[in-house]
Image 1 (cartoon, rainbow, N blue to C red):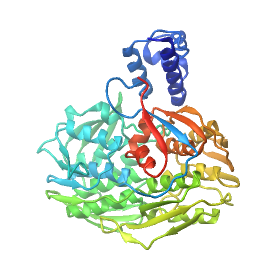
Image 2: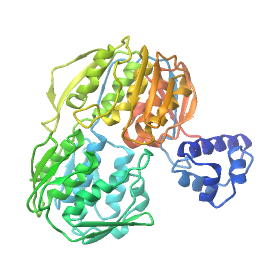
Image 3: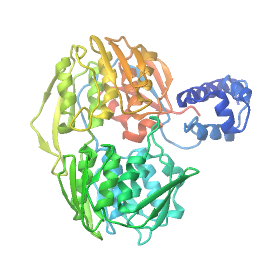
Image 4: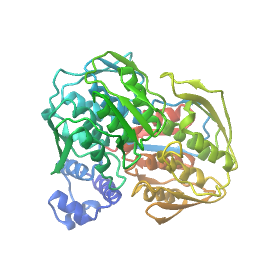
Length: 508
């Protein structure tokens, strides 16, 4: 292997290790080798086999090189270009994965319209296919058909795919009605710090689900019972609420869920359950009353709504590149707080009258954003459960605040690590000061500069880095972008359609 490749691969391995927060010794222990060997590999002074590269990539959960197959790995970004025209918002990632899990409730045929073709969906499809569920893309690949088997084969589950998505946790709610005992791999996904599943367990225990965890596996035992009083969620989380809904949907009786999330993906799941014949009262509130059905066997056709976080991503792209851009099919009810904050910061924008999404329920608008002279907000930016500022939209305010005059305090209190990843913007010319693991002080305006760097292992900070690269004069490189593909369909190509210059490439 040529010396220059050894050096380049060594740098990729070092960056991936540092992003995971590991020392050379920790990586060496995972590989069964020595710290000095890892040091030589990272400096490009050690011959390295393809097998070892694959082992390192698996240990770090980071694709180091792409060997013999197509697929994006890195992005080369020529920045400093203005965007123009219009771009449509795709369907919601988080709604689509919840609906895929929800399809396990139904013995009949489920068709989901305009499903986001993203890695998170692909991983769930791999899991579903491995346990006997038939899935196929129809209507020129835009819609997804799901047909379950009479009996699921959970022993054949693709554990590798399951571990790469946190959404697998939402199999618990449907499966407790189908199996007396089963196993699930630990949930994976973004590296956002430690997130306990105890709130899920507290809710699902009321339906008779008991979980023990050993050696990377959840072992589930079910002795089905019906909740005898309202379920009070200890955390107003989205996936917790969805799991409780999925369990309640096939409870033959009435289940009341309190302190429920009323966020966009939860509402979409409620609308889907109604299409299955399950009555849900209180949609959009923190108290849901579910009239479950012991058996669900219907052919259902459902259209998930658009993704408010993708809409926020595109809005932020227009702001940081100082562009005029029309973003179509924006689910405005889930962006109203964000838009109110941006109006106070000085955002120049227009919006159309509201119209209905394909699900007939969610309110959409078309939003035109123009170059604006922004001022830092007086109050800090912080998330709250819906209808507050969306947790996943907080990182985009780091890039927006970097374009504004003054200092903005961002308090990302939900996740342990995510605020730390925002400081990657400093490598592109940003001035972000990490006050503690949850608070970042952003000073603007920023003169962005090009850089080559590893993609952060968390989805939204990764996209924020990409947006900053689009604003930076010169050519930047963002490596290992799998995490972006987890949540966005063809993002580079779609941004190119409105004036960006982003090239997808592979090293080897």
